[in-house]
Every structure is written in structure tokens, then in C-alpha cells.
Length: 325
Image (cartoon, rainbow, N blue to C red; front, side):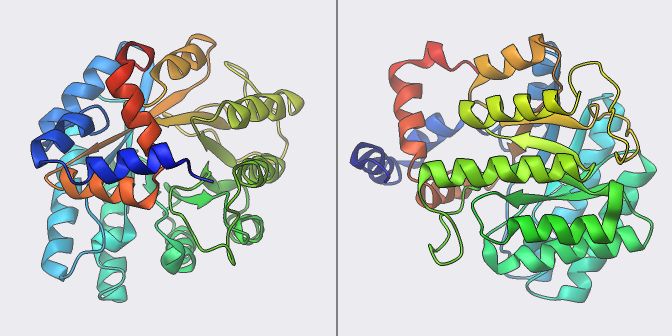
């Protein structure tokens, strides 16, 4: 159960002036402009980090807005190439119009993925709430059928359906399946998702096992020590680890700018010391870099969707030295 302290912190934060929310969010959002994201990536590159860039925004109301996101992501591709950054892309399918005009939304996503392919960049489809889980997975399958294998999805460990989704993607994509597995930030209904902490951790760990067994590329996106430690043990059981070529006989092809069958991922500004510890041990670590004019909406929405973030806000206030980005 989410603690009342965390809930109270969130309730107070979302009622604070915009400048205050901005002060809190600057740790977790690169800034409003692409140049801000580039600057953060250049700085963190010195810590052996790689990146995935997200232009903030989702659930748009018009296809004109979708065009903005397509154009902005094309600029991101240019910036990654120009500055020789070790980065790929993270996109919200709904930001490209998938819920407004499915055909046009798919055309937008395909155009971006094709452009990324020409620059040897990978595109990750972020997983939004359960309303679009099926359609997001289908986009990945359809793009692979069109020869665009530089795209993968995110799956949320907390959903009851996720192991079945892994099985489906293994059948459809084989060794080209490429996932980011996370516990999931959306507080989904209890009839479709686990709601207790330990159940969510156990379900996420089971997904890591299934992905590794399938030969898939597995990006473990978690700040939870129990999930990370479990993943490290599972990797060791498969003979996988830093600087070791993926030994799985059913593994997919080694991609440029990817780890040996796996990597760890963390949000900007969260558990920096842990990320650096993983990197020092030789693990590939990727930082999620969000930026854009929608930083305020993003910050408020994340607080409302998952009140447990309140404890991180409090820690940033009271003990900033313990959580350097």
C-alpha cells in the first residue's frame, strides 16, 4: 500500500506553483529544448552511459500535433548523428496519432522508424496504459513484417497478460524480439494487474526469465535492487555478463550500440549511484532522457499516476547528495 506520507507529498507538490514543480522536475527532465537533452547526454557520456531520448507528450488531440512529434524526432535523429551520441529513441505511439487515426498514426511511426534505420538507430515504443497494450505490440509486429527490425516495445511486469505477450512476440519475431521490461508506472486496475509490491517484483522477474530463455534482447528497466539483483543472477545462470558475447544458442543478432543480449536502464535523475556502480562493473547502462515543452504536464501526470514517486521527491529535497543524477 502506498504510504500516506508519499501520497501527501504528491498532493502538496501538484498544488505548488509551476516554478516549484519545475525545480523538482529539473532533476528528472533534461529541459524544454533538444539542446538541453544533448547537453545532458554529453555530460553523462563521461560516465560510460548510453541513452534513449523521449520527446515529452502523448494522447494528442489532433493529427497536427502528431506532425509536430514526427518533425521533432527527426531533429533528434539529426542531433544524435551530428554529435555522435550513443543513443536511440523512445516514442509514445499515441503521440503519433495512433488513437486518433490508426492508419495515419502507423504511417507516422513507420516513417520515423525507417529514418532511424537509415541512421542505424533503434526505436523503442514506450508502453502506455492497458488501453493501448495490444495495439502497441501489433505495431512492432507489423513493422518487423515490413523489414524494420530496429524497433521493439516495452512490457509492464505488473500486467497479468505480459508472459503471454512475450510468448506471442517470440512466435512472431523469433530472435529479433527486443524488449524493455519494467514493473510499470501506471497503476492499473487490480483485475488486470498485480498491485502488491512483492507480487509485482516477482512477476517482473518471471518476465526477465522468459525473455532470456527466448533468446530475446532484454533491457532491464528498474531502480529496484531486488529486480536488478535477480536479473544479475539470471544472467549469470545463462553465462551472460559484461564483455561476454551472448552465449545463448537462440539469441538474436548482436546490434550496434547494444549490450551482449541485455542492458540495464534507468530514468534520468534516479538512482545515479546504482547506475554508476553497474557501469563500473562493466554492464551496459542506458539513461532515459525526456525533454520538451510538456515538462510540466509530464511531471504532474507521473506524480498522479504513481504516488510512490513522492518518496523520491522528498529524498531529493532532504538528502540530495544520496541521489546524484
